[in-house]
Length: 130
Image (cartoon, rainbow, N blue to C red; front, side, top):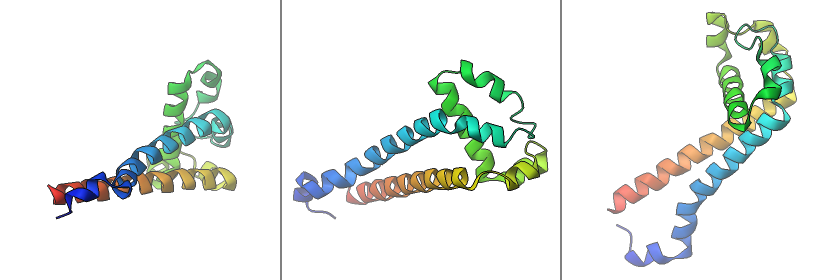
């Protein structure tokens, strides 16, 4: 059990606020990637049947639709083997995907992993305390 004075300290505040702040940073980074790099990602995946025609629709999409498009690209690049097996992705597109965009997607995936782990730790810590 944790002493009740701990919950009124600065450490507890940081422990509880960090997942929220990291989630906001993650959302902001998703918005940035969807605004700045989504078109380049879609150009790199032109031969994939799943993304066919998305480049034409891109200028008419709002911020939410652009973020959803980015999430789809990110998901397909996170697990490309499943997309290639189903015929959604072209294996050549996956091989020729620009390395700097892969690094940005890796940073985003790492950030989301940190948010999930930190939130799970805080949740477990709170459950053990009560």
